[in-house]
Image 1 (cartoon, rainbow, N blue to C red):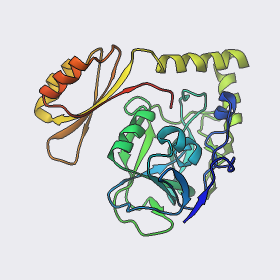
Image 2: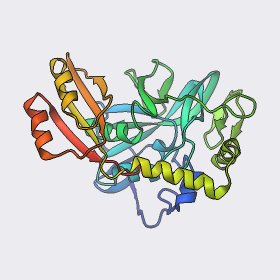
Image 3: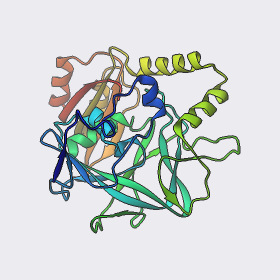
Length: 298
């Protein structure tokens, strides 16, 4: 296992301004397996992957730069190269909090795309759901068996992925465009880079440069609303209704079935402060593994 000094590797961990963070999406990703392990970037697989959830990374979640921002180096995570079949990766019809047009899958028979699979434990998966705005920007889905193959070893179990809820962005030919930064074969889609996609989006919105980034900053301000909290918890099916009623300022929580029978995860954006009294009430009414997060920009 080879280690990299973070201070010396600008390709893996660049120092990007707000503007460059937008136009540099989806960022550099190595074509080999790597891990964050004991606070270091390490080439190779450093721990058992069987107890982790494999997630196809179609955009920045394959990049050490973005993963360091989301998880920090103290989290042990692993990324392995993979190939996606019969789909391509296109620009989604949305804008991230930092101003990029993110990615999503698009059916494309015969296509092959070089991507990566990210392996997360349960707590890391909850963080990833938050960063992907689960239920708002993306759905978390089980991918069809055989459409993703790990390059370095055999994997016959499920692989999951995030799929954009708004879908793909339609450009001037009324078709999506693929991310040119990602290598693909046998695709029938035209590719452009993030900077070109943002120029087109700016024209589509009919705004100048300053107003465009003012608009993005307003999106960012909404996401970072001071009193908003993202609450995640687990509970039995019989307790869902009364627990949802206790969540302050929450309109429509996301309910996710868990592997354990009649167990569910509840995710909710609460627009009012969550006090310790509320936390105790949730636990008294059957909530477990309660996690309350402030909405930082991811």
